Length: 331
Image 1 (tube, one colour):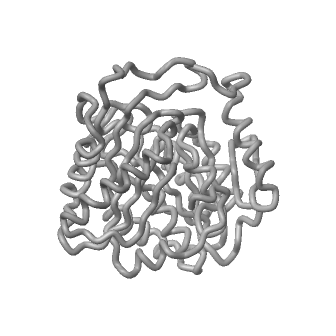
Image 2 (image 1 turned 120 degrees about the vertical axis):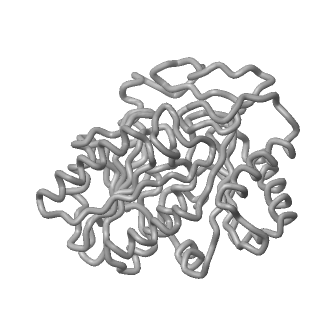
């Protein structure tokens, strides 16, 4: 597999350095902790929002740092949780008088790192709350989790809590909003190909040309089943049904619909998927009020997509409509 890589062990640091160099007025890079933070953080009048997780899911999370979203992100290596001290030092650097909210995708390594960092920070008098994101409907438990995984739906949690924090909400209120958005967000993904981590140099798992992994995780974890490649309508129908039936969403609901690319799918195919998902939802009586198409939470170069729904009310819709200033223009 051909990639733009020097030494694989330097992949993350060189990516983060490039990100900071491309956004010198708004982002600051702290290489000791793999930390990307807002250049103007912390701010005394707002809760600081932090997320970490492994690298390889870009633009999540380092490319969602900016006004109206994250104040900082401290990723680990590719598909690896950040060390506890990275998270702890990040909390100290961005801590404001209004506190810090830690967003954590529900994976065992991430939970351990962030929970320990919270304990260390609280021992020093920092007000910290933690919110676990678990929007994936594909499996209840996986290789990396107890409970559901956190996947592309994390975008909506970041967006809502970031908007609330920007408006001056206190830590309890920002945490409440994050929990609320997470509770009405569901995602299901599928892989057409495996991904190739830079350090491995070969596909992470074997997937025959005529097969797909339905319910794949963003680290290549197994999904619900492996099945034959089908026409787009049928595959999108499986994703939509899995998501709609889980909450459940019902006729008359207003939703945000996201079609997220996993890193290796052409944008034209993502819009094809969106069109099919949109029509299938309308047939169920579900109203699409906000639309998102692009790459929000990827799995390196994996070809595939995920479908996310968020059940909207006035509060969530209002927060999602707030502007954000982050490096990725698709947002």
